[in-house]
Image 1: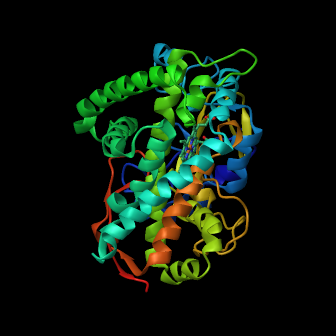
Image 2: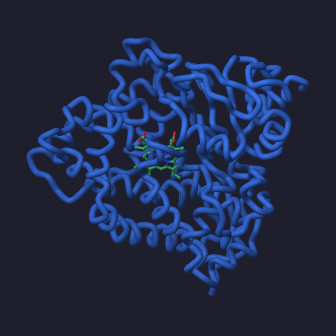
Length: 408
Ligand code: HEM
């Protein structure tokens, strides 16, 4: 570690510094590993030649105030071919000016009116599910809650009947697993078939919405226009698929991981039940404490100093969002779960021009889920020993058995 105190041209000693994704299952309890990384080498060079930042301040600077993109300086997405990169149009995979043009148009679809219409559509459905399980005293946190809310809002977003939600959420989950296919090769075939099927489903729907637009987000996307500019068919299809993929699993993770927090800290669950006005800060604390998306990444476009080192242009830099969320320089007692915490913003939605476009929708979904649960049930216990993880790149539970009692 002697290099750590030298000039900025020095290179750190490569290593995993406690957070080795190949040796450790970083999903169940990652915080100790990332604390070690942040303390031992906050500007980390991995043995694979990629960089990792785990301090809050460095991550904010990377995402908001550095010359970076999601592609390298020749416009290629690292790890992909030039041809695949050229065909890739989802905003999270684009740099300006293409990114900004498409994001502006997509933003037009996420109108307050379109979002407001979703809440009353999904609340009764969630209540129905809660009433269904109320008498049982046990549930699966994912199947009975965490999946129900985003699956329903996905249908509302597309303007399709709620009956389609099981079919659609299975399809979207399979498509999402493609992101982690090297870790789950047995899913490759199913997942390839799912992307074709989802594309076919959405092409038909987009044609329908073009002929007969409604109030839903998909219709807004089809009609979105700025200065005569609109999304072309390919751009539309890629945003539609991307939005479903970006929104379903991540929200399942927020709700399921959040309910695990409420099980570990029952006094916080009771606090929410007694004061439902805490729902908004409770969601932020769940996002900070157990984020479903632990990292995001950027490619530097010029040599940039971070800490004691200069990271070279075209280096792949991972922002360890989950580590930044527990940086003691930013959060008092970062390992304490406090649903009324009112401090710095967590990093779980990323930052800069790619800041999560669905953050309002995700927050609304989680508020509905937590409020419904806390108002009805008490003594909620999630059995973490029987938690299964979905075959996802992210921290998304596939199943968590839990028990509860009726509150009244
Ligand atoms: C708890 C749920 C969610 C989490 C934790 C989450 C997290 C993230 C993160 C970390 C990024 C990358 C930001 C960056 O690299 O700076 C992102 C981008 C994005 N998210 Fe989310 N997300 C969630 C829900 C949603 C939902 C519900 C939608 C839409 C339906 C959505 C749509 C997007 C889009 C479109 C982007 C790309 C934005 C851009 O590149 O400009 N997300 N999200």
